Length: 412
Image 1: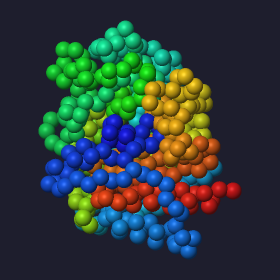
Image 2: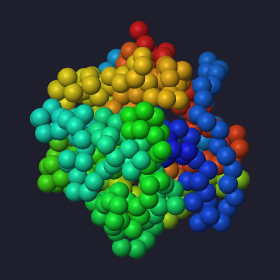
Image 3: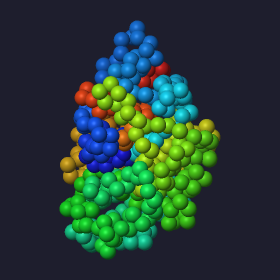
Image 4: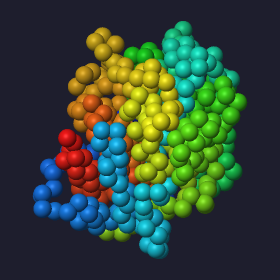
């Protein structure tokens, strides 16, 4: 979700990439529509100064048939602007607001990272230990069986674990009986599993190459569950959501399709906004989170402020710093991912030529971004219930740039 495209669901901390053709392809086959490639998110010239913010955003929404979205601008650790536009239901009768809960796809991985670092702070996890010690099944690249895979590798997408599409597409559940997270992962990684293959790993030494992996995040979610004795949704509710006072945040767990999460998701193509059936991922730690702009702003502010927001702490400063710290430097850059491609923290990365950091997410009917400047003074969140498939349909990126420009105008 996010980087999920060519490489999976997508964010690590920083930003997901544009949706892949195969993810949208799955959805559009279900809809009976054709696939059109959406350009990658890119910086755009700022809007004309005379244009009102609302008018510019609404014009871009009409241009791409976006049904609903909400955004927030954070400056110097404060929420300075937030607003919703459009609607969150098929009948266009319920406004999309900053309190509307919506799927955020791979931004979920950031919350998994927080849970992981909480256990590191307690001494219950080590980032550089063999992660197989925390799992009920072996985790070894069969081509390099002597090389351990660590949590740090999973969190920087350098573990050599890969999302084999012909299997990974099964995690999207539109109906039917749910499957437990642990059962799916054991079936995929255990050599005796039905879904096992040597091709579930890259032909590279763990730690040497960066390739985005959703299942890497799912594995970390399972580690959290096994160490705490709680499902990830319950653990993060107790240790992240409740402490921060979040009211519209939760998980869709284990491939269970919930009808009570109110936002309808849409795919926009040819001037139409097509509603899609509710779905959820079996590997929910990599993309099953829903939240509102208001709630996600609190999480982001806590991370940017070394683990605390508004007097409420979710991480000690040391672990928050380690989560955001650039993990790649000098000779330890992964092959094919040098300084020109940016850098990575633990479940986040840099983007826009290394000038911003954060995470994003993309799934059918979902576009989400959570970005900050490297000095952490400016941040923008944008959540949308419509994925755009028309060529040139970069309205989401244009709106993101409008909000970034607005934030720059608020810097002192």
